[in-house]
Image (cartoon, rainbow, N blue to C red):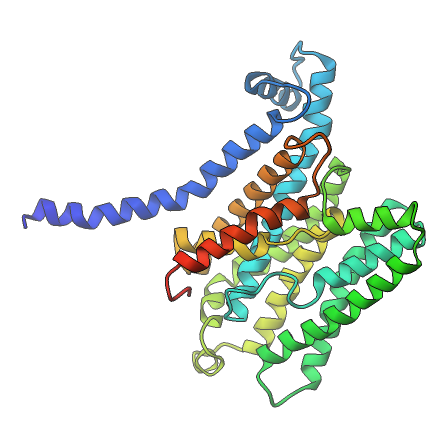
Length: 349
């Protein structure tokens, strides 16, 4: 083999790796553009671009006022919320799967979704305003994980990862029973339909203010993930190996779990329960860019945000009524995850 052929053989895998790394960003842009144009009210891609450009630059576009309202005030807030919610769930899933060294772990493993659900259901049960319901959902998610970690800290002398998982299952079951009790006691004509719809997940009533309200929590949770990305790689090792390399596993695990929980609770508080995003998207990102958390995190963020925006666009166009996101993500995510299990490589880390 000549030197040129040898260099070509080395360069081909590198080019393929770079293309895979760029793919999430390309898919994200395409999905966002299509989501702004998709819907019952027909808007072309060029008209969508003109509306967004005119709003950003402050120059009147001369387009129909209804079209501008639909694109800027209805679809754009949903796209922004979808990006934030999907990216938060996917990033939290990548962190949890690494921390617990388990590819079947999702962001609700420690009961954050159950806690947020109980908070929101309680707010609906007591007929509180929308902002109060979102606040109770956010606080409920954080409180649930705090309870799980408190139980884990009491049960010392055992595998801390296993204890947290088992405590999360137990607390989640307890909170689920409380949710069922409130559903039984709720008004079957007004409160129960609202509770059921919230639990299925949706971005139908989202506003630009809702998207902006969760942005600080999402950014605050993202900061430690970015700063500790190289330590996160070491957390995928066994507990003893990580400690031998100088990592304080207990404190680091607590910090990263708090960051992932903060992002998940913020996302769930405005969207309801949306499953499978935090479970499947990190797997796809890992297959594209590898297990290095420095590359896995941005890939998961882009894939998660793009996926949820695409599913939301499908939810408002696939039928005469809007389909809840939790149903679509399960219908799409479950078969895809089974395919990943059947075709995936033996080692995931």
